[in-house]
Length: 154
Image: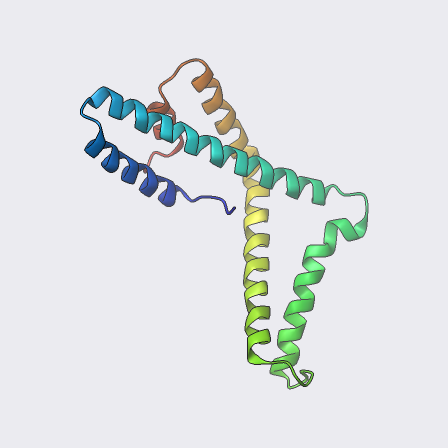
């Protein structure tokens, strides 16, 4: 599962608010339902970030050179195949479908690498904010307040 963006989260929560308004006569129940939904969404996002960070850290701290570098080597191989195609060195029988699939792999791989590096660099900043949000939630702070602090634009 890809990391959810703030805009997608806000859109989902606003959609749930709108739908909840149609099904709850009691405003307090509606707000409680939306707050619980926000809490669940934040739990999923936090778990997704933890998982991503754990994978990146495990690979970066791996014992072998190959474990630390297999993704960049794979991506360079795919890019090399594309460059070879542009230079006319493609093997016979390689169809346009295969070429397009190769380009998709490169897009996914480079996107994953950029996201992974971004997560790795921002984890030191994000992790304390997540911990603080979880601490406040354990202390009974309203989920709406936590969401607003973590997503001031939403």
